Amino acid sequence: MPVKIAQGEKGVSADHYLAVKAGIEILEQGGNAFDAAIAVSSVLSVVQPQMGGPGGDGFLLGFLGQEVIAYSSSGRSPSGFNPERFIQEKPVAGPLTVTVPGLVYLWGMVNEEYGTLPLSTLLKPAISLAYNGFRAGWFLALSVRARRDILSNYRWAEYYMGLSHGDLVVNRDAGKTLRIIATRGWNEFYHGRLAEELVSELQEQGVDLGLEDFMEHEGFRVTPLKLELDGRTFYELPPNSQGITTLNLITALHELGLDRYGFNDPQRILAWSEPVEKSYLFRDNFIGDPDYMVVNPYEYLSYEKIKDAKTFATEGLGGGDTTFFIVSDGEAVVGFIQSLFHPFGSGLMMGGFPVQNRGIGFAKTKGLPNSPAPRKLPLHTLSILGIDTGEDKYVIGCVGGDYRPQLHLRVYENLFIYSMDLAEALDAPRFIYTKPYVKQTVEVEPPLNTVETGRISPVLTRPYGTHGHVHVAIRKKEYVVLGNDPRSEGIATAL
Image 1 (cartoon, one colour):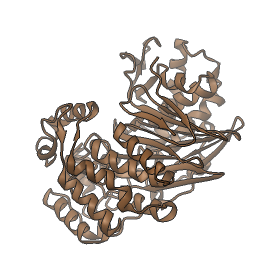
Image 2: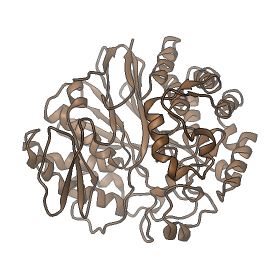
Image 3: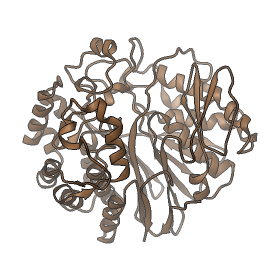
Image 4: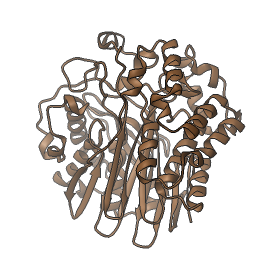
């Protein structure tokens, strides 16, 4: 069993070793978890540009002592967005899929409210890597191969076409953008000369937006969804995040008695068919931009509340790509997630960084809270699960896109239902419903197995073959335990 666990007074778990190195160095310099999070985030933006960066969004959820802290910074569709054309064409890349990026705003909020070190210090490792270069990782090269046909006609190709594992990657444009943010301040990204240059670059690539779209972007400190269950307190990010679906599934586990199944029981996989279907249908029918929702999400956290809702099948969200990491400084434990949605997002570039295609998170039909419209937040796949047991505090997050609620659920089950230790919980074989409703498809890692029914088509993958990988932190009284999924090319390191 591959074990990627670290324990100590403070530490970092992330999807790339260079990002972990940067976070550890900030902690060693006396920076706190929020400082280190910005350093890790910016390095990941350079070394894993397919997963997230200044062209995408970001969210944060964590514990600082007894306080729960949550931030949301996701962007709206442009003012010139054409919803009729979007519904007709159903694009998966290109200018019609772009939304305003929110990650840099999140850096600014976190730095101003909790930071102890300046952005010039925190962004320095990422700037150096962009200017001086790094060797392309396996996942970066894989993403280039996977997306080259879809993105070959966009500016993305000028930066990444033909990139192979081990190639030296130098991106001076990205380094310049980060250096401007580091010297002039994060607000330059939305209100300064840099903002004008970024908007002009997007306009040249066909995005119908103006400077006001950047200037009017806001991130927020949000009140997390909170659920008391089985002696534990659960926290998730509120809409436009899909965090509510995680809680719907966890409550279904207890309400329906699904914990009665043995871990290897084939019937366990079949038993999850209905609660997965109903939870995802509720999400796709009722969750989206909070300004357009007709339900109060804080009142619909339990499966009992949503299972009989009148719903119809939509096209859902599809896959997605993300990077998630955790930082702990001995007091705070912070989960941080950033994304472009699909690898390299829209295929458009801005300031040397790929730009997200988060707009495809909109429903492909009218009449829903998540139906497309100008200056509107799409339903977002990003979420983070926090658990307070009264003694320990857990932060659970993952790469996983549409499947994130199920990945959170699987790890929760492993830890709290099947009493696995952290290494076992991350290593254990999983099953994920990759098509959650109508004709369902479930991907199953061996040695787990199940049977095909009229509604469920099982797909047996290779070991570690399902979508997504998970990071977990357990904050104990005197130390923290950090776990990194063996499916990831990242590491966990503690001091």
